Image (cartoon, rainbow, N blue to C red):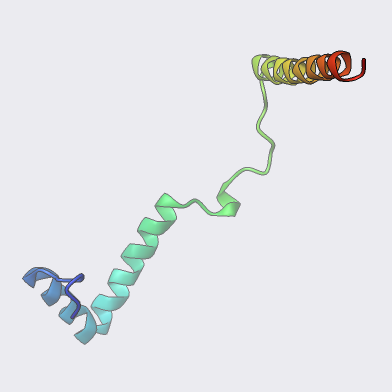
Length: 85
C-alpha cells in the first residue's frame, strides 16, 4: 500500500468484504451507479426544447452587441483621425 492511500481499519475491512463477496460488490456497484445518475442527469431526461428567453434577456443581449459595436466604431474613427493625416 502507498503512503498516500492509507485506509482506516473499517475502510480496509469494507474493501476486503467487497473483494470476497460478489453479492456485496454488485450491491455497491448499483449504489454507486444510482448516486452517479442522480448527480448527472442523462441526455434523455433533459428536454430538447430550447430555453425560452425573456424580453429582458433579449434586450440585454441587444444592448451588449450595440455597446460592443459602438466601442469598435469609436476605435476605428480615432485610428482614422490620428493615423491618416
